[in-house]
Length: 329
Figure 1 (cartoon, one colour):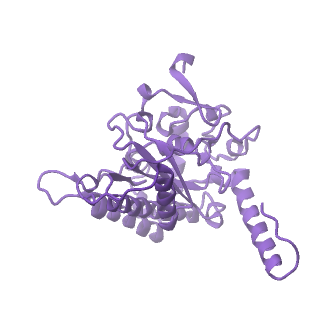
Figure 2 (tube, one colour):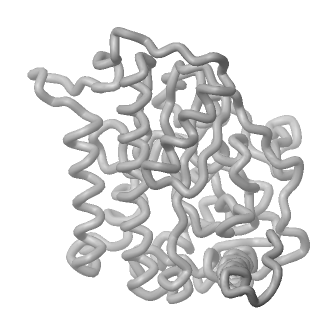
Figure 3 (cartoon, rainbow, N blue to C red):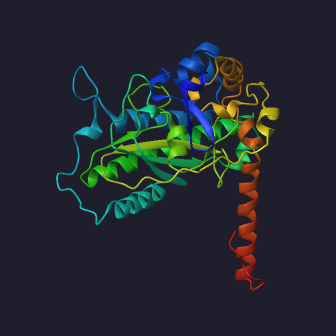
């Protein structure tokens, strides 16, 4: 990509300009149909239950098909007519983040809703974007590319989906517009969501763009699935990281069983704008294993997060037993 076609962004990475937004491609279109038509027949039963839960939530709680001939986004029409007033955008942001964490998110950040987070067939439907992330359990991810990792992916997608639906409902209850961008669908089709969640999450300060082409967080490494809520409730955007922390590490590149990552993959920001060569290698293996997560498991930040949690638990236990001083990490 020519220099004039790209722009710098948080995390010392590069992404295409908004005018180069990719065409939306759904999970079924890029994984199930071309590479494994029997994807859901061969998926473990527990994974199927999570996928079914997520799609049912979309059908019942995001899209209202009661009006003949068209689908109506519920979020546009059912706001509380008595708008709740906050002392300031800071107070509103704190309230929304508390709600998000209470609904099951492990991470939450806010950014201005930019056009570059949208595919070519959509546009921002709010002034702000509340980005929510939930961690995938290390015990399952560490078994990638085995079935436990694929089931865990489905579980967390369903969890994040319910969290964003709940937050959108809560914000509308406050009297403001809000639309849930479910990680599996926001328009009733099984299309993997309507946003480019990773660049939005990076701009919301949740992490940085990793060499694995996923966002990497200090808390959980790249073991995070994302969803978002668009709203017109005035909020305070978070500050993105000034640079990424992958450094010279190439563990994910070396570990990839499909050889789908390359040395300068850090420079590609948008998922579906990634070089076709990568996807031609990644997608068949991903479909076969029901969600390969080897790059997530191989990331030192994933292991570091687990080790830090274990160390904190040990120190907290020692402090409660009177066995020493507990130092915050």
